[in-house]
Length: 210
Image (tube, rainbow, N blue to C red; front, side, top):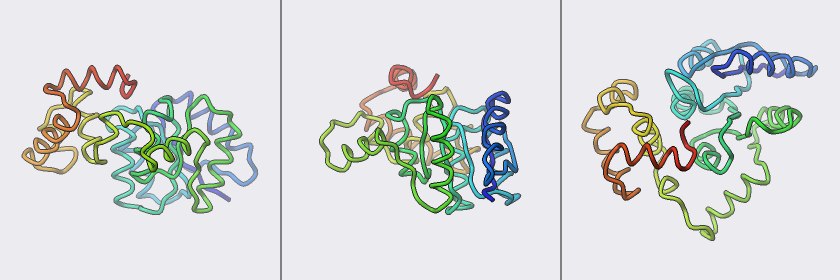
């Protein structure tokens, strides 16, 4: 039996997923969460084999939650199920430790295949994501500025783009204000931008925030 936790801030999405997954004889939904902090609580409780998690959540984004969960349980299979296209986040999150990435418009049967795949300790890579990864390895495609950021820089970039202050980031990420400021400087330099408003505009333009 594969024990599954569902993390999404929309109760109707959780209910739909729970209903569909419960129809699989080898699946059992053992927990639900509406945000990243609750997701970490589920991990601490330990009654799960696989986590399905959204990216856009209040309190703590899926990007930040993934990093926090990976720090505690590096081997827990995590499937990202997001409304954002694969091209926007998939390669970043796979490098950060996600076991797979699916867009919410995928066929429900693909979610089942993905869960079974990552439960066996393998990555679930769609053809579209495989192409993105191949482009990155071969250097055949010119990278967008945000694709040049490290995992931590990418976290800081998204938080800045959403309007979070450096002080608030330092508190929630358990970093010093000086360290966060250094990350902000690196982000600005790598992306050739000068203000937080520029970051927000870039993120909106490229569909990285809503």
